[in-house]
Length: 347
Length: 168
Image (cartoon, rainbow over all chains, first blue to last red; front, side):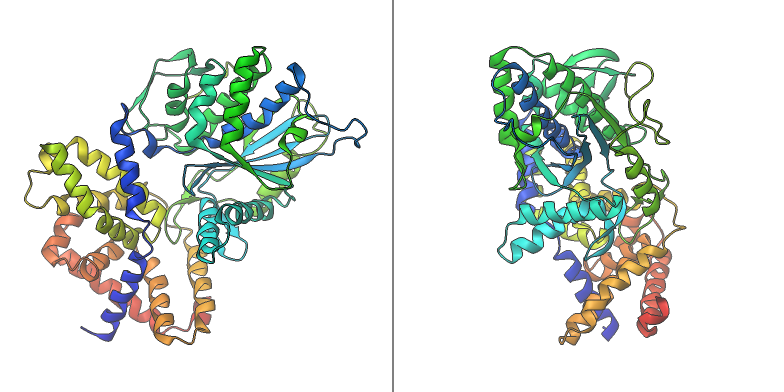
């Protein structure tokens, strides 16, 4: 064996050593099996952000319906805030990333960032957007520090650098808790352009308008395989679901349902230590508009895997316009917002 | 019982499959996705897969194909990736453990090889597969395997002699 071959062997072995712990994967695989839909948890994994958004909306409706959040009446008028909502798959994979800005008048603008964006990660160089969190998480844990916080902070820095905005707060949500949110509101209405049946997500829904229970919602939000635009279509589903859920919550006046919703939402959400969600929620209105940050739909080959290219200047221009604090109306945006002009139905 | 058989296979081979896939993809999360997807698919067809001589080889082939065919993409704009691979080398240069640094530099060079060349390399030098086995897994002739590997070796050699400043 030549010196070069020996070095190659060592290098490849070192790469292989990076593999994730098989026990976690084993647990995943076994978890799938005992359920009726064995494929479900696998392909999936995005939707957590929706839960994060709900966690924000829920206390709002609490405020209107029953117990007002403890807002100091003498407090200065609300200032606009920019927050990052992070959807976790139960481990450290950030499968949904949403940047939201809440204006002084309580309106919410939320932009989804595809997880496969090829971006500059501060301190690490170019990488896929969804590698920022797990890498920082692992590095922090190796030093005995809080991986969850480090991961979230790394992602916050990466997104802030990308869009050229300061991010005030973040909330991270565990998607495993998600299904119960849809159940807690007694079903969420969505509309499918075509019937969807696919085994990875376990989705099996007819075309048209329908109300989803928790289990169906999970599949609806998880399906990626079989969608024409993959993760991008999934993001649109999240947005449609979120809007519908927001409407559902706003119209909810059953205190028992509300209480369950609040409980579920709170247990699934982790925020930065300085962020008082309840107080923040007092500023909100249920009016939300959503968009996806514009990317070049052609995948690029990267060092490892395909990713979406994005021009940093485009990202900053998009953010500056979309998150402008006094949006002109109607929203004159060059980007395809997901507020469907037609019927709100999704692929 | 196919199910028991499958469980046993997964328990015995999962770690190795994950390591193989990680070496192949240079991305542990993608590796996890691929291995999970493949194993779930394999379970549905286990009655057949479990009956072949070497199920591991069959599943390894599924993993390899899943990666190689994982969205056909344009290779045009590959430049930034080369930069980032080289950027990763920068801190390593100061490392007093020279061998360690050399190894990591090699890792980065392997990571930018074309996929099929890298697959062939990983199969030979990590899985210790024969050319015939590699040919079977990649679905090509043995001659093609040898040319993948010799081209990969040549590229790794050239890069070795090229100061990184030049590539930058």
